[in-house]
Length: 65
Image 1 (cartoon, rainbow, N blue to C red):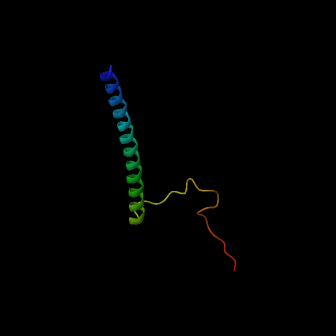
Image 2: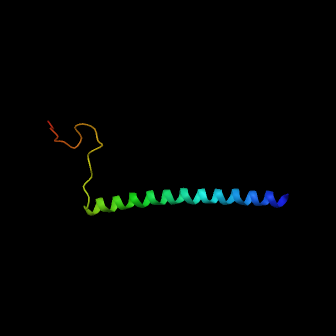
Image 3: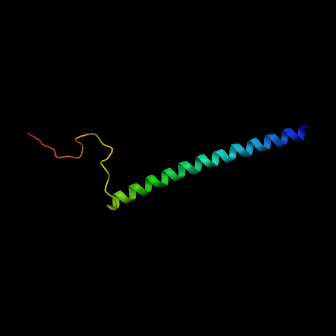
């Protein structure tokens, strides 16, 4: 009986480890994508999009002193 409990415990631990690896991989990919975007922006290889900003953002500015 203890062999079954030991096997079940091992399977649960393996599944928890697998979940941790999946989360870490997802976070790492997200960080890599963010760094890539930053580098491309700094190099001027990519123009930032204004698609998700509010109305009037990125337009002409009329400044009166």
